[in-house]
Image: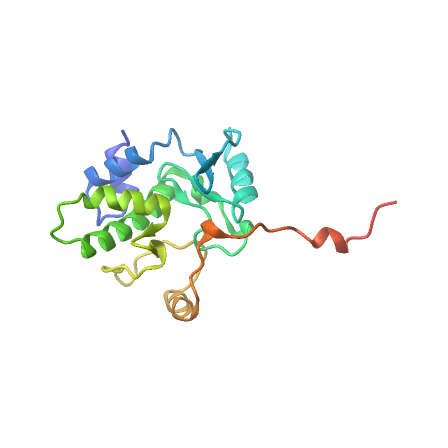
Length: 197
């Protein structure tokens, strides 16, 4: 079970400690370097990384080709990035991964709770399924509006240094793309390099 002090220090404070513990247990990740690569319904076996650098390299190799989940919270590595090179070491830092994952899961659980208020179905279980698949009621759940957005001054869960105004403007004009359905990317830059003789 994850340490209470780590939860207090790193997790989204809007979630109860018991909810965070249950969420991390549901993700079933043995450690902070855990990587799961899924293509459709099939899991791709990748070598277990021994270092953060290996974990980062494997993640960058698969993002855009498959649904890649990383760390204790099984955070979707392709979320909020346009190119695999934008993925940073923070995804494999226990505290940062816990912060990012619980902020995203908190949003998902609020969406599920709002839509199923008073329902007898388990909101937590539905939220876990939506978090892991990225879909809820036929919609890409990570791109839906949070019923309880972060207060001004709180860190945004997206990666990279982007101001809140820039992120809001981009969200209004961008068409959300599902990173799990990304096409295979091929590096064509090698074609323009001169051959070594």
